[in-house]
Image 1 (cartoon, rainbow, N blue to C red):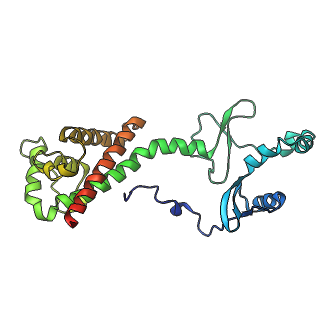
Image 2: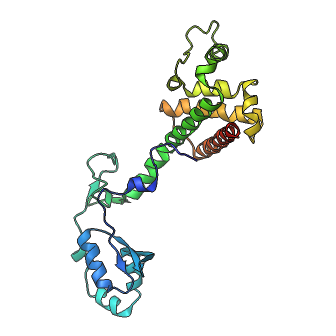
Length: 266
Protein backbone atom coordinates (compact mmCIF):
# COMPACT_ATOMS: atom_id res chain seq x y z
CA UNK A 1 0.00 0.00 0.00
CA UNK A 2 1.23 3.47 -0.83
CA UNK A 3 1.30 5.25 2.51
CA UNK A 4 0.93 8.96 3.10
CA UNK A 5 1.95 10.80 6.23
CA UNK A 6 4.90 12.41 7.98
CA UNK A 7 7.00 9.32 8.59
CA UNK A 8 7.86 8.00 5.15
CA UNK A 9 10.34 5.27 4.21
CA UNK A 10 13.42 4.56 6.32
CA UNK A 11 15.87 6.05 3.80
CA UNK A 12 14.26 9.47 4.24
CA UNK A 13 15.52 9.57 7.84
CA UNK A 14 19.18 8.92 7.04
CA UNK A 15 21.29 12.01 7.86
CA UNK A 16 22.69 13.62 4.73
CA UNK A 17 26.24 12.59 4.05
CA UNK A 18 26.25 9.87 6.67
CA UNK A 19 28.95 7.24 6.20
CA UNK A 20 28.57 3.90 7.94
CA UNK A 21 31.09 3.34 10.74
CA UNK A 22 31.76 -0.38 10.38
CA UNK A 23 33.19 -2.73 13.00
CA UNK A 24 34.99 -5.62 11.36
CA UNK A 25 34.20 -8.94 13.02
CA UNK A 26 37.84 -9.78 13.88
CA UNK A 27 38.91 -6.22 14.60
CA UNK A 28 40.20 -5.24 18.03
CA UNK A 29 37.35 -4.15 20.26
CA UNK A 30 39.50 -1.31 21.60
CA UNK A 31 40.06 0.02 18.07
CA UNK A 32 36.35 -0.07 17.34
CA UNK A 33 35.44 1.66 20.61
CA UNK A 34 38.02 4.38 20.02
CA UNK A 35 36.60 4.96 16.56
CA UNK A 36 33.05 5.16 17.87
CA UNK A 37 34.11 7.70 20.49
CA UNK A 38 35.91 9.77 17.85
CA UNK A 39 32.87 9.70 15.55
CA UNK A 40 30.38 10.35 18.35
CA UNK A 41 28.45 7.12 17.69
CA UNK A 42 27.12 4.65 20.24
CA UNK A 43 26.48 1.78 17.80
CA UNK A 44 28.12 0.25 14.76
CA UNK A 45 27.11 -2.56 12.40
CA UNK A 46 29.47 -5.55 12.49
CA UNK A 47 30.78 -6.85 9.16
CA UNK A 48 32.18 -10.28 8.32
CA UNK A 49 33.27 -11.31 4.82
CA UNK A 50 31.59 -8.20 3.40
CA UNK A 51 28.20 -8.87 5.02
CA UNK A 52 26.50 -7.31 8.01
CA UNK A 53 26.20 -9.91 10.78
CA UNK A 54 24.92 -7.84 13.69
CA UNK A 55 25.20 -4.65 15.73
CA UNK A 56 27.75 -3.56 18.32
CA UNK A 57 26.22 -1.29 20.96
CA UNK A 58 28.28 0.44 23.64
CA UNK A 59 25.81 -0.28 26.43
CA UNK A 60 25.69 -3.99 25.56
CA UNK A 61 29.50 -4.08 25.36
CA UNK A 62 29.69 -2.60 28.84
CA UNK A 63 27.13 -5.11 30.15
CA UNK A 64 29.24 -7.95 28.77
CA UNK A 65 32.52 -6.57 30.10
CA UNK A 66 31.18 -6.01 33.61
CA UNK A 67 30.78 -9.78 33.90
CA UNK A 68 34.53 -10.27 33.44
CA UNK A 69 36.57 -10.37 36.66
CA UNK A 70 39.53 -8.42 35.29
CA UNK A 71 37.23 -5.65 34.11
CA UNK A 72 35.29 -5.64 37.37
CA UNK A 73 38.54 -5.33 39.33
CA UNK A 74 39.52 -2.33 37.22
CA UNK A 75 36.15 -0.61 37.48
CA UNK A 76 35.99 -1.24 41.25
CA UNK A 77 39.01 1.03 41.71
CA UNK A 78 37.36 3.93 39.88
CA UNK A 79 34.99 6.51 41.31
CA UNK A 80 31.69 7.41 39.63
CA UNK A 81 32.20 11.12 40.16
CA UNK A 82 35.28 11.08 37.94
CA UNK A 83 33.08 10.14 34.99
CA UNK A 84 30.10 12.41 35.67
CA UNK A 85 29.15 14.82 32.90
CA UNK A 86 27.58 18.24 33.57
CA UNK A 87 23.94 17.76 34.53
CA UNK A 88 21.14 19.43 32.57
CA UNK A 89 18.08 20.18 34.68
CA UNK A 90 14.49 20.78 33.71
CA UNK A 91 12.08 22.14 36.26
CA UNK A 92 9.17 19.77 36.87
CA UNK A 93 6.74 22.32 35.37
CA UNK A 94 8.98 23.34 32.47
CA UNK A 95 7.84 22.29 29.02
CA UNK A 96 10.27 19.89 27.39
CA UNK A 97 10.24 21.65 24.03
CA UNK A 98 11.73 24.82 25.56
CA UNK A 99 15.31 25.49 26.62
CA UNK A 100 16.55 22.02 25.78
CA UNK A 101 18.16 20.63 22.62
CA UNK A 102 16.92 17.06 22.27
CA UNK A 103 19.07 16.53 19.19
CA UNK A 104 22.28 17.33 21.07
CA UNK A 105 21.56 16.27 24.66
CA UNK A 106 20.84 12.67 25.56
CA UNK A 107 19.32 13.05 29.00
CA UNK A 108 17.77 15.62 31.31
CA UNK A 109 17.21 15.52 35.05
CA UNK A 110 13.73 16.56 36.08
CA UNK A 111 13.97 18.66 39.23
CA UNK A 112 17.00 20.34 40.74
CA UNK A 113 20.30 19.55 42.46
CA UNK A 114 18.47 19.22 45.77
CA UNK A 115 15.40 17.36 44.55
CA UNK A 116 15.58 14.94 41.62
CA UNK A 117 12.24 13.54 40.42
CA UNK A 118 13.75 11.38 37.68
CA UNK A 119 15.36 11.52 34.25
CA UNK A 120 13.95 11.74 30.73
CA UNK A 121 15.59 10.94 27.40
CA UNK A 122 14.78 11.76 23.76
CA UNK A 123 13.08 8.36 23.53
CA UNK A 124 10.63 9.35 26.27
CA UNK A 125 9.83 12.60 24.48
CA UNK A 126 9.52 10.90 21.09
CA UNK A 127 7.15 8.30 22.52
CA UNK A 128 4.89 11.03 23.92
CA UNK A 129 5.00 13.06 20.70
CA UNK A 130 4.22 9.94 18.66
CA UNK A 131 1.21 9.17 20.87
CA UNK A 132 -0.09 12.69 20.25
CA UNK A 133 0.56 12.85 16.51
CA UNK A 134 -0.27 9.25 15.58
CA UNK A 135 -3.91 10.03 14.81
CA UNK A 136 -2.88 12.93 12.55
CA UNK A 137 -0.59 10.59 10.61
CA UNK A 138 -3.28 7.94 10.18
CA UNK A 139 -5.80 10.58 9.10
CA UNK A 140 -3.33 11.79 6.46
CA UNK A 141 -3.06 8.24 5.12
CA UNK A 142 -6.81 7.71 5.40
CA UNK A 143 -7.69 10.86 3.45
CA UNK A 144 -5.12 10.08 0.79
CA UNK A 145 -6.68 6.65 0.32
CA UNK A 146 -10.18 8.19 0.20
CA UNK A 147 -9.01 10.62 -2.47
CA UNK A 148 -7.57 7.84 -4.63
CA UNK A 149 -10.73 5.74 -4.30
CA UNK A 150 -12.97 8.72 -5.04
CA UNK A 151 -10.98 9.55 -8.19
CA UNK A 152 -11.40 5.98 -9.44
CA UNK A 153 -15.00 5.28 -8.52
CA UNK A 154 -16.68 8.70 -8.54
CA UNK A 155 -14.82 11.04 -10.92
CA UNK A 156 -15.97 14.55 -10.10
CA UNK A 157 -15.53 15.76 -13.65
CA UNK A 158 -18.05 13.20 -14.95
CA UNK A 159 -20.58 13.23 -12.09
CA UNK A 160 -20.45 16.73 -10.68
CA UNK A 161 -24.19 17.47 -10.92
CA UNK A 162 -25.20 14.20 -9.32
CA UNK A 163 -22.67 14.56 -6.52
CA UNK A 164 -23.65 18.17 -5.86
CA UNK A 165 -27.28 17.09 -5.43
CA UNK A 166 -26.14 14.42 -3.00
CA UNK A 167 -24.08 16.89 -0.98
CA UNK A 168 -27.07 19.23 -0.68
CA UNK A 169 -29.38 16.40 0.35
CA UNK A 170 -27.01 15.02 2.99
CA UNK A 171 -26.06 18.38 4.45
CA UNK A 172 -29.12 18.45 6.67
CA UNK A 173 -29.66 22.10 5.71
CA UNK A 174 -33.13 23.10 4.56
CA UNK A 175 -32.07 24.49 1.18
CA UNK A 176 -28.43 23.38 1.08
CA UNK A 177 -27.45 26.85 -0.08
CA UNK A 178 -24.39 27.15 2.17
CA UNK A 179 -22.98 23.68 1.46
CA UNK A 180 -19.48 23.57 -0.04
CA UNK A 181 -19.87 22.15 -3.55
CA UNK A 182 -16.40 21.22 -4.77
CA UNK A 183 -15.56 22.10 -8.34
CA UNK A 184 -12.19 20.32 -8.36
CA UNK A 185 -10.92 17.14 -6.66
CA UNK A 186 -8.58 19.14 -4.42
CA UNK A 187 -11.61 20.89 -2.89
CA UNK A 188 -13.05 17.64 -1.54
CA UNK A 189 -13.00 17.15 2.21
CA UNK A 190 -13.55 14.16 4.46
CA UNK A 191 -17.24 15.01 4.81
CA UNK A 192 -17.67 14.71 1.03
CA UNK A 193 -16.02 11.27 1.05
CA UNK A 194 -18.26 10.18 3.91
CA UNK A 195 -21.40 11.45 2.12
CA UNK A 196 -20.60 9.53 -1.08
CA UNK A 197 -19.17 6.32 0.35
CA UNK A 198 -22.11 5.81 2.73
CA UNK A 199 -24.83 6.60 0.21
CA UNK A 200 -26.92 3.44 -0.29
CA UNK A 201 -27.01 3.65 -4.07
CA UNK A 202 -23.41 4.75 -4.65
CA UNK A 203 -22.07 2.17 -2.20
CA UNK A 204 -23.05 -0.53 -4.70
CA UNK A 205 -20.01 0.44 -6.76
CA UNK A 206 -17.75 -0.35 -3.80
CA UNK A 207 -19.64 -3.35 -2.42
CA UNK A 208 -17.96 -6.04 -4.59
CA UNK A 209 -14.58 -5.07 -3.13
CA UNK A 210 -15.63 -4.35 0.48
CA UNK A 211 -15.23 -7.05 3.13
CA UNK A 212 -17.59 -5.24 5.50
CA UNK A 213 -21.34 -4.82 5.38
CA UNK A 214 -22.62 -1.44 4.29
CA UNK A 215 -23.83 -0.79 7.86
CA UNK A 216 -20.41 -1.46 9.39
CA UNK A 217 -18.61 0.48 6.66
CA UNK A 218 -20.91 3.48 7.21
CA UNK A 219 -20.53 3.24 10.99
CA UNK A 220 -16.72 3.20 10.83
CA UNK A 221 -16.67 6.14 8.42
CA UNK A 222 -19.02 8.08 10.68
CA UNK A 223 -16.85 7.36 13.73
CA UNK A 224 -13.79 8.51 11.78
CA UNK A 225 -15.57 11.69 10.68
CA UNK A 226 -16.54 12.65 14.23
CA UNK A 227 -13.13 11.75 15.63
CA UNK A 228 -11.43 13.77 12.93
CA UNK A 229 -13.45 16.84 13.90
CA UNK A 230 -12.36 16.46 17.53
CA UNK A 231 -8.69 15.77 16.80
CA UNK A 232 -8.17 18.31 14.05
CA UNK A 233 -9.75 21.04 16.20
CA UNK A 234 -7.62 19.99 19.19
CA UNK A 235 -10.64 19.19 21.35
CA UNK A 236 -9.05 15.99 22.60
CA UNK A 237 -6.41 13.38 21.89
CA UNK A 238 -7.39 10.17 20.15
CA UNK A 239 -7.33 7.04 22.30
CA UNK A 240 -5.09 4.13 21.16
CA UNK A 241 -8.13 1.94 20.45
CA UNK A 242 -9.58 4.69 18.26
CA UNK A 243 -6.35 4.92 16.28
CA UNK A 244 -6.42 1.14 15.84
CA UNK A 245 -9.94 1.41 14.37
CA UNK A 246 -8.74 4.13 12.01
CA UNK A 247 -6.00 1.82 10.76
CA UNK A 248 -8.54 -0.92 10.07
CA UNK A 249 -10.68 1.56 8.14
CA UNK A 250 -7.64 2.81 6.23
CA UNK A 251 -6.71 -0.75 5.26
CA UNK A 252 -10.30 -1.54 4.23
CA UNK A 253 -10.44 1.55 2.00
CA UNK A 254 -7.07 0.68 0.50
CA UNK A 255 -8.31 -2.83 -0.26
CA UNK A 256 -11.41 -1.42 -1.97
CA UNK A 257 -9.28 1.03 -3.95
CA UNK A 258 -6.97 -1.77 -5.12
CA UNK A 259 -9.90 -3.97 -6.07
CA UNK A 260 -11.55 -1.17 -8.04
CA UNK A 261 -8.31 -0.31 -9.86
CA UNK A 262 -7.64 -3.95 -10.75
CA UNK A 263 -11.22 -4.41 -12.02
CA UNK A 264 -10.83 -1.41 -14.33
CA UNK A 265 -7.58 -2.78 -15.74
CA UNK A 266 -9.08 -6.23 -16.35
